[in-house]
Amino acid sequence: MPNRVLPVLGCLALALVWLLDLGVIQPNRIVPGTGHGLISAVGGPWAGLVSLVLAGCVLLSFLPLRRRYLPLLGLVGLSLALLPLLLEVFAGRHLPEDAPYARSSIGAGFWCLLFLLSLMLIEILGRLGSGRGLQLMILAVIVGSWLWILRGGGLESLSLVREFNARPDKFEQALWTHLALAFGAVGISAGLAFLLALKMIRSVAWRRPILGAVSFLQTIPSLAVFGLLIAPLSALAAAFPALQAMGIRGIGWAPALLALVAYSLLPMVRNTFVALTEVPESLADAGRGMGMNERQLFFKLKLPLALPVIVEGVRITTIQAIGLTAVAALIGAGGFGSFIFQGLGQAAMDLVLLGALPTIALALLADALLTMLAASLKPTPATA
View (cartoon, rainbow, N blue to C red):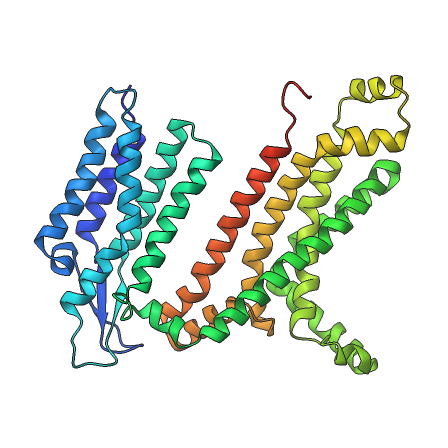
């Protein structure tokens, strides 16, 4: 049976890569540049090759072959791996040599091509029913190819690369700050959520107040939470100089961490509570019949069976925390959000991308790793 998703994605990619600008040449960092379409950007041979690859993907997806997804996987995977070469060819053709401040920038056509090829790869892997090992191998090949092309020096004129090269130390500092805030908040909220869920299980009267409180915290806009914490933390820092010496003040990491913990509680509390309470009572009765006490039932039966759902709550919370940490830069917490807001203030969109793209990459990586962890924790039919 022909695949209907891949032809649509392939035709859409082919249309957008011809209609939109593949790249932009800017005379300097801020001034808007001149856009170039596919054939103007890379020339006829490269434009023909891109069109041929996309047309080949469309035609292969129509063939009623059982193994058509293997050549499609190779074609789409190779295209994604070598995609930065288009930017290298574009910069070599159009970047003036006598303009030291000129730079090339990525156009909408390239972003659409990258996005649609990625969707095609996801669809192909899903049709193949591939395991996590193959997916990680393909991802490693694509990322390694991009890093190899970047290290080759052909993309030094790319505006995004120049923004990074201008501030590598700040980028590293932003990375560690972002990781510390996001994963620190997730770790603290995971411990609190586990304790709150246990309290709800042991005492029915506490269920409504706890769920109501964490739900209320989730409804407050993130900027409002950050703003509401400034005044009390400033007062505490003024009253207790020891707190100020620890870096706890109205702005900075302290209000950001508290706000992230507050936002992270609802998914974790809800998932932990549901996971622990929905373990079949028949299994618990069987454990009691084997002589287990309540403590052994919890740690040897209920908790292992609940772990996949609990990890799913951690996954949702981690992705949310990584995104909200970028907003925390507004109160001086640092992280990749500082690049985003600096770029918006300076009208430098590539500086915005320098903060946005790593944030997206961290969220996708956390999603993939925690999804794999949850899948590995699910009991098999033989052990359930």
